[in-house]
Image (cartoon, rainbow, N blue to C red; front, side, top):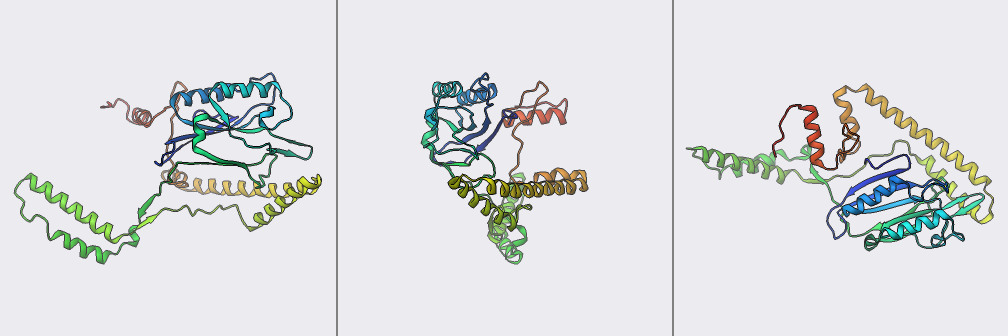
Length: 328
């Protein structure tokens, strides 16, 4: 989305029905650790203001770099006071529960991550908590559940699994009842519709529905990383108790370094395979990584972005078919 920057990442999720929000915005923000800076950067403030005006539900996880007793700190600083005042003035709330540390190093443990949501969104969330999963960084993971959302199930028919023998039998049975005399255009339309319905019925009866599953394996992940991650998690728990971080830091480096290398190799291999493909197949190869990939916005010449599907289609039409007329 065009609201993103180096310190802010935003994604929009469209949900199915189920009594919950139909559209949700999730943001991840970093607030610089400088007292002279405003507690809320301009781009984050515009994000909150804009989506509040549109009535869109917004969740923002922040590396806030601020202190306030309401978040589990023992102290209050100017940034923490300003941030809390901004949150309260804009009808928002902090989802954090308890005072468990979200930032842990060998010489410091603090609460600096918060989750900001509009007050009304609290009805759709539950079970906010910090996980025990090792994040392999100084920051811990937090999770929560958004309720009232139904997951849409995508299904399809694989023509290779069609029983063509039974298909022909059913099709012939349906065609027996078709109109046999055609004397005008109305009869042609009727016969065409009946023939189409017969083909679709016979095909649906003999080609079973299959639910689409994402079975794409992560090419860079293997059992060696599973063992190293378990070891790092165990050493982290030991370090919290003994306050001896040497073994944890060494094994964390030994885990992160090959992990990053494996990711780079996988990405390089993917790019090389795309470069070898014909140009017409490259875009298909890239987009096929996710069957649900779609264009969310297009940047215009004035630097702004389209905000609707209609705007995207109009822009594409003008670029690829200049001089064409848009008929409403």
